[in-house]
Image (cartoon, rainbow, N blue to C red; front, top):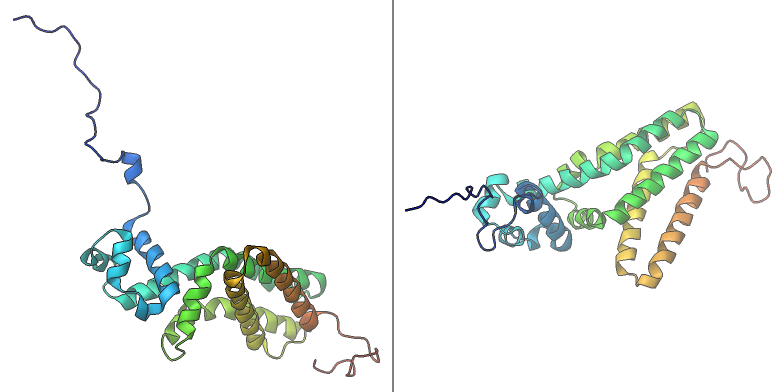
Length: 242
């Protein structure tokens, strides 16, 4: 029997039917997929309306596999807030730091830092609207999940409040209620995102433009130059609280 002189085939074995390529198998880790789907469902339905079975089905795993990553729904719910908080902090931390540097300077540097931070926050929420709806669902039950606020909202907003209070201490602005100011801007921005979600395509650009105009007017009203003494319509002597 003649031996074949043909060189052995060194090509890799063919994939079985339907078997994905190695590169196609590589995607987001299962934990990240779970967080992504859970965030969307919790944002849409709240914690009571999103079951672990629903989340697992959207990921394409069974509930026991989901429990391997998150032992309970509460743990998964908390991790979703941690995930959006990390994204928010990554986007806003440089802007918050710039506000801290500008706070004692006042004038144009402070005004520019305030506008940049406010508009950066609005941009972030527009790009990640699930952040708004995740928080709105949580706030529907004020007594539940207060720890989420303390862990994933108040630290970042507290940095902004401290910068405003530092500016007030330096005499560059008048700000006796920094906490209320920050809270008002946060709530207004979330309201803007809900308005965008309900708007028709033709209305969205108008909403985006008008909200940014309002943000600038709001900041100018609070932190713009004080009216000159005796100026018409000032309604109060210079040096009094507005």
